[in-house]
Image (cartoon, rainbow, N blue to C red; front, side, top):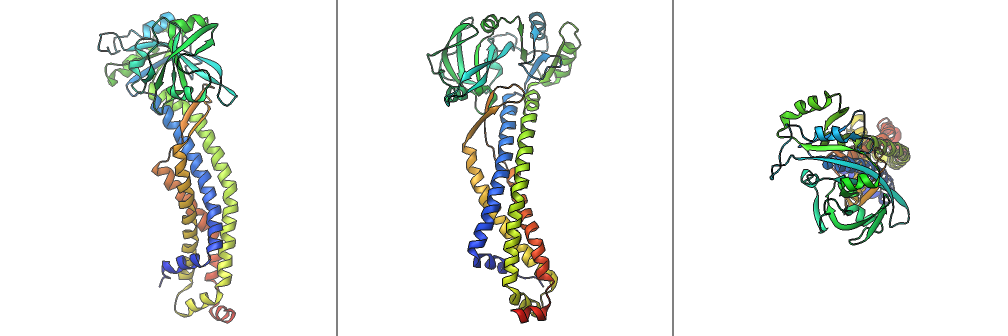
Length: 387
């Protein structure tokens, strides 16, 4: 015969103060745990969304990022004119040779950070359907005009429409602001590739981005490009390229978060254990009465474990509730791969919610198992006499 769950719930309500304090401690731990996972997931989604499933990127062999890559002009031209590449509406090949450089810029907060400056060609915008002009106009080809991502406009100083920036020993005028949604492009500045190469005295491109006529041509395109010894290049799907970039920072955030959570959870579990031991000590006579009514040791054990689980679940629900509000906040940090500023949002998923609630229940049960065993092992006569 099992003790009704309502019995455990009523006992928690009877001790409102200790229940609130213990659940509050668990809620704090769950909040930190969920926030860390949300941060890592937001980073991953931002970089994955940056890549298009239809595009491929060509980088210098063994290069991890566009910043590290260097493709000679001739090699980039060969990779950008392969027959596997699709054509746009005007009949031109849907491929762009781009140059990527880093530039240190002052932030509105007074600090400074690296920003990705991407030199683009005519096809670049069409290859990135996530990017659209939000304010102003597009830079004119061959000019020292630039457009900035929404995140750059919000976080950095001196990038409003009409203002000028100085880098590469030239003055660049901001003529447009583009909206790139929740992608990494929102943290970039775009300008003309040839002008940027001249300004930074570069004779090589960083990357070739292309859209193939059909996905089935990827292996053919990769074999042709990587098999040409003149190019010294490798080909990757664009989405996988950006997903790989997220792994290092995402792993770091998860390890940091789990480490902090593990430390905090020890205190939360001790708090739950003290609360449950106190509950057992205050209900000795009640436990004896339950045993006398025919409830076995197992029923008593399960009743107190259920009480501990309810305590953990309450803390988990509160912590997750407040963590959900982080979804409205944006966060920026340095991308470990490119060492440039990257803005992204906390992202809550069903999987993160499930892990958070599971962790809360684990803390509750871990803190309640010893008190529950003590309650279950009580002698009926001694319990009734003590009560």
